[in-house]
Image (tube, rainbow, N blue to C red; front, side, top):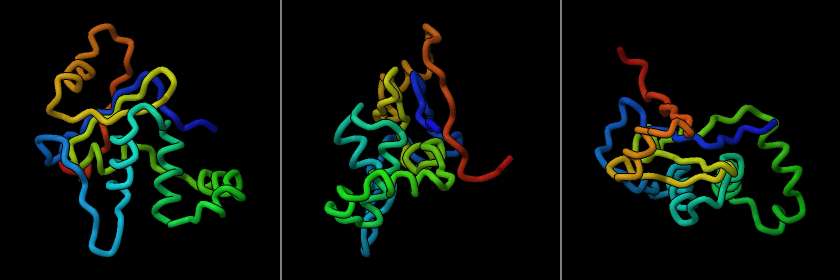
Length: 142
């Protein structure tokens, strides 16, 4: 089953509090999933698909050793995706930290700050080639 997006732009959530793209903070006791998502996606735009990013964040968050990953990658992948996974529409990047997420035709993603010209162009989607979807709201407010 493929859960990647193609030619899609995820806008920030309607109730996102950030006015601009903010780098998610870590906690005192370690990395957070949003900070890992940000580090990987911002550091290497258009390198990861949604599935690859979610898996890499899982591996780093669980601190799976490189040797184990090398030996059991497919098994770990199958185990991770054997359970239901939330897509990036539910990520804190577009819900709380002000980042849109653009997926190109190959399904590779890049973070687009809410305040940027590129973000506005993706939202306007004048040629209609891009599917534009909103991130999930943080609250079920009215």
